[in-house]
Length: 186
Image (cartoon, rainbow, N blue to C red; front, side, top):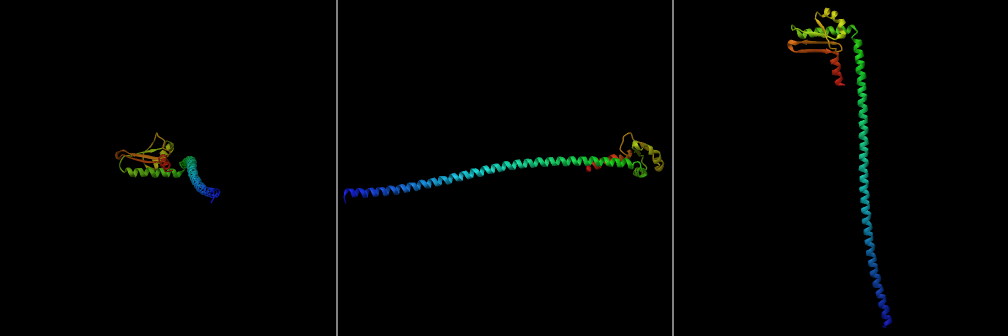
């Protein structure tokens, strides 16, 4: 073989080796680029997921805060409605009690409570108090029950109060006490 042919073979061989090396290097570079791209995509995906989680938490906090504020507002409204209802109910009850105190049934009620206080006292001395608004009924009630009655200086809304000092007993059948008891229940 001549030199020209040898050079041609050598050149072809060298070019083949160079192409083969170039293909290997290019393939390695492409693999490295693909791997780097995949890692970049994964890191971006993780970063986006993290941002989404943070945003979701923030939105949940805001939503919970709004819900709490709305629940509190509704509770205040409900409490205010209950308070107004309670006031209205108590006013109506007081109006009905005032009307009741003008009836004969109220006198019968006072008579029964005075007799009950006398039975509880037995032979012990008892002081039975009437509300100042019932002063006009005192003589009639004393006549019916045979008990000595005292008009209280303190208003208690009707009914009676009785004291048996020897046994430290207070019998409180006043409407004011009953209303207060009902008010605590409401």
